[in-house]
Image (cartoon, rainbow, N blue to C red):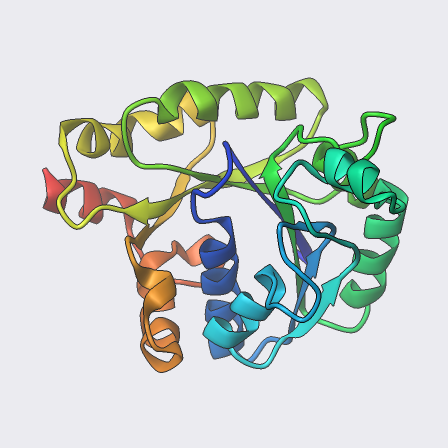
Length: 237
């Protein structure tokens, strides 16, 4: 599995931290890792973007940010308003494929959800996954409402013939409510794919050494970790 496309059921749900955790787990196994951010929005020139956050948390990775737009909007809208050229799926796929020839693992982190537009022609991260024939890892929130968003994302993937690798909860609460606890069992059914990890709330604020030490414990073996869905679900009730 040379390339994984990381998407979410929405925005601000932990995609970047999950990407960092997958990268950290791979690095701990001695694998080389690259991270591609097709379009970074809402970040000014000189400010750290998502790939910089991943590198700070995970360690020695190769980073590629293909486009940057200043306003915190969907990539197509942000590019249009800035008068800049939008990023295209072929450009993203080409960059990821090149890095895949030089690294053991390439992670392509989208912006927002799966069908957020890159350009005014309607291209999305789903088109990138299709060009790469890469599996898609879905990051979802823990609580109420996540089942519908996860099911819709899974349906969109199936409609396009794309493989869903699984689901990771992007921010597991310190004190999970009933909905979050029940969703541990219900998310795989909604997704039609396995639950592959839960990243604890606040993980992105950890010191890098703590983050790297914890990453494998948050992710299932398929993502390079040792987290067990059954044991975790039983433990939280």
